[in-house]
Length: 308
Image (cartoon, rainbow, N blue to C red):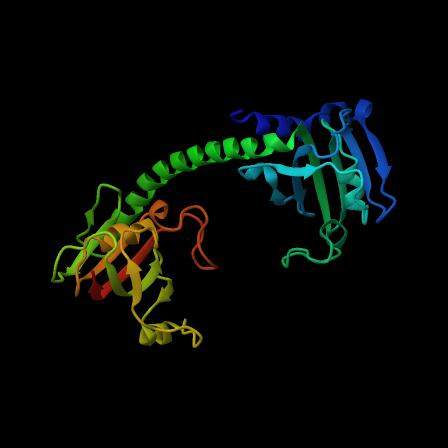
């Protein structure tokens, strides 16, 4: 399958742009009065229970893309069901789809999304939608399709992570030099500084460590800490959470990879700094409002207790 679904989708969304005069057909939905135009009109209708695969791109008045399945690992999908009740204009458009359809339409945010529209949009903002249906598959094939799409995306992520490890490593080394840090680097790419050696036996997977920490972005922005006084000092204090050492079963995948590996280097009483490339942190997804995608993270950690 490889990238066939993406190629077909791009063709479905763009087919006929040079043939508008010969392919164009405009209709209006009975509900909501959405005027939509077929740039290309398909002919194959899915049987009840079969699955349409489609791509959808939504742009705002500035021609900026605010949503696109083309940038997602998998396309949109819809089960054909002739018995479903049509409740709005969007239902009319989607329930009349055929393989090969390439449709464009514009309407308000309220009409397209309904009452639960994204908070960064206003109800009466105009949006432009491009919709392309590129395949029909059976329900039995759907899980196989998504498994293959997931495999392809994982391969892509792994390749992107390799590039980021190199790029992030360069940034971390520059940061370390600028800040006088004598960093060491593991084979997996974690940078660290042991600021105080601990004591006790070597740490093994499954060991429970109780860790005080403070997490920063590369620009110095603090995003979390277990230390109450530091949270108050930095203006991120949250009265609704406990401030105490975090218990971590080390080496068990309970925390980000950079922590899992870094804590294995420490003992009770150890104090260290972890400089974590984004693939060993929260990766492409980021975490919360402060940790964006592909963020390099810096943690000051201190192991307060260890329990085998």
